[in-house]
Length: 71
Image 1: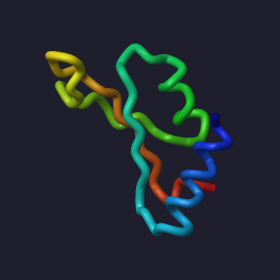
Image 2: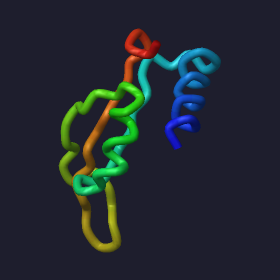
Image 3: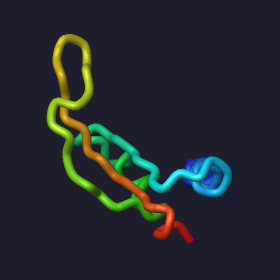
Image 4: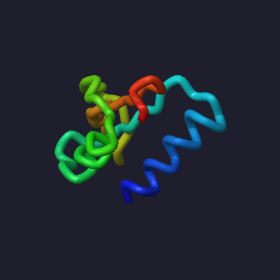
């Protein structure tokens, strides 16, 4: 999965010209949090009530990677 994510990041920065890439996870999704951190993302914080889930809203953990941080 990390190879796919790295390819997507490279495409986003080199072909599309993005300045940053973001990843959102559920607060308790440890494997989902580890993946972006493994490829260099930094945790930005928690977005409260950000995502709709069934009949309520849930918090999301936000990670980002800036172009100059990408090797």
